Image: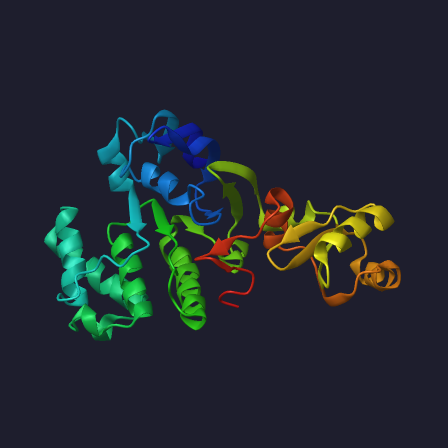
Length: 315
């Protein structure tokens, strides 16, 4: 059963299409990942689904409600954690949650019970009377996720939930999200440009330049490549690219630093590459299919983060 349904969604800014006829569905209870680089249209789409942004054409439904005409019903069905921290640093953890309950017009006794319950779940009950300014980045993120779950939403939207956190904290946050999902039973819709986070999703939609270019389970996306990825750096990548096509009949993709090619039996192909390539090989790397390889194969480039290669960020 679909809890989110999007058909031919289009959003323009000053005549430029940021979202170009996007269509997808999210099943009730699954963790759905939106994977793509910065500026791909991820946040625009999530803002439309959360009724924070209008759209030009198409349709979008959340929990059966129309995002254009039933905005109040949509908002009552969802929780949202933004990219940026939106907590009040001068209030305590308890006060931040209490204010959220007030905004959702929760009955006082229910609100008190729910706050105690959710603080226990996120491991912050002992810190509930501390000002948020004293919290670490990971603690603040956990509190924001707790706030988004207070009113028991059917769908929890997470927009780059671990952006700016160190690798260890990111791992802890995702362990926490998986635990919460089992406890709360929500559908989770999250955007990310981190491959390892997308790997943890039930299904992933890859979005680039405002269009969805693939949507399936992570294992299905990786199996679609039908081969291993061999990445090399040479003394002359342009010449090596030409040699590889002429001698092996393969199209090598140019990366920021080197070449990438998809081959069957990569462990057997590498010795042949050294034997037959005239250009000096400086380094070689063999990888079994990953979501990043899928992205490179579909777009011809890597996902980038703040101008730096994303391959090993947060590893």
